[in-house]
Image (cartoon, rainbow, N blue to C red; front, side, top):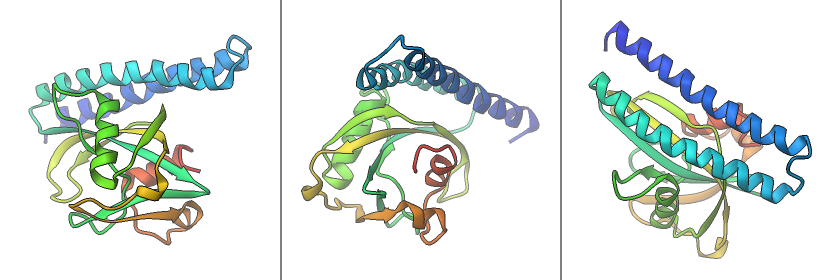
Length: 203
């Protein structure tokens, strides 16, 4: 990877972050200024607006990465928090816990559809998406260290069937981790979980 590619990657990172922050700030400002009085409606509006932007960024991401001539993956997953605990998986690929999720099937589903599907396939989870959270771009494969672009799209979600959760192969374990213990470093978790804690999305 040359200097020009790295420069373009950093630029893409910054653009993605700025666009989402601006949209989220606008939605929150509308709510605080009394333009939207219903909190539930405000959350849904913020989520819908951001989802539209995420899907457009998803398409733009593919175009820009193709020009850089490197491999890319777009993945989605639900962030499910209950009683101060985070629902996480572990499989045979990694030695750390991670949120459920996986790659978006190109041309057949959008980001939210992928999130619903991955939750079902990995944990037998029936979820309700509440709103998008901060996305993250990783520039190498966590397993192979191969240079590539991985766009992670996270959604805050509610679990509708907690009594039916179970690991579905290749998932080997599904557990709830105490968020305060994660913050204290007591559990080995994926980089995007630490990222979402830093952003205030997991608290």
